Image 1: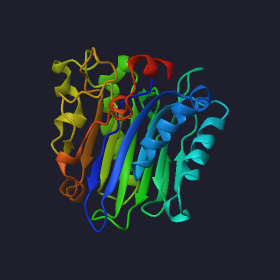
Image 2 (image 1 turned 120 degrees about the vertical axis):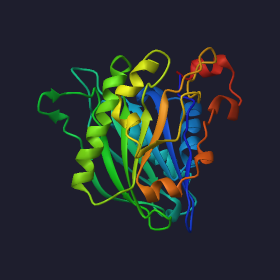
Image 3 (image 1 turned 135 degrees about the horizontal axis):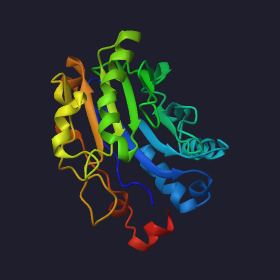
Image 4 (image 1 turned 30 degrees about the vertical axis):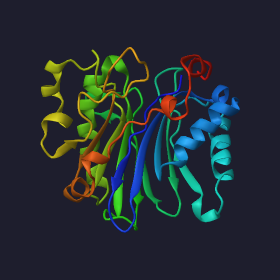
Length: 269
């Protein structure tokens, strides 16, 4: 089943920048081989200027390349084309995933990338899939550069991994001269994975300089039987916080948008 979530943030300025996050469950050759699934994924990505794609499980690297080719085949001009940057395969033992950013070339460019080493002394291997951090230039918006720290936590370790994102922020802020940070992705930050009593122990939540745009009651889950705020967006930096309208954060339900039945949705899995 595809994830039913796209988070939309509108950064003001000469042009609005639409930033999204999409957990495409187990994205690989199986999904790319289904034309209707591919069309829905491409349609969803094309609505955004910058898309964080999570849970890429593409061992041969062919599926993501096909996705980009199909996405750009729909662009009417080269100026409207998308480019991408993708992490190496991350994970423990044989289970691996990748993070990817797909961005509209006329709006954004990549200044630098950084694979967090996850090797703090005494706290090594804190993340199941350590963040692949990207620093973007965005000359047409009010905030002209932004750093995005992506995350897809292991559900059973969500509390620890969300807390450790504070250390990632500190590390990256010492490397790059930017004050504009977005930390986003599938935090698994709800429905038993992060008990209420644990929030006080999560520095990313307790430190007041971080602003959480997505609250604990926002349902970002796929299943109709659950209401869970798994996916989150956190901001850091005065200009970034001022530039983003909190009301612009939305959950995009592709099943409703594309009129899919539960059976059709299951077939797409």
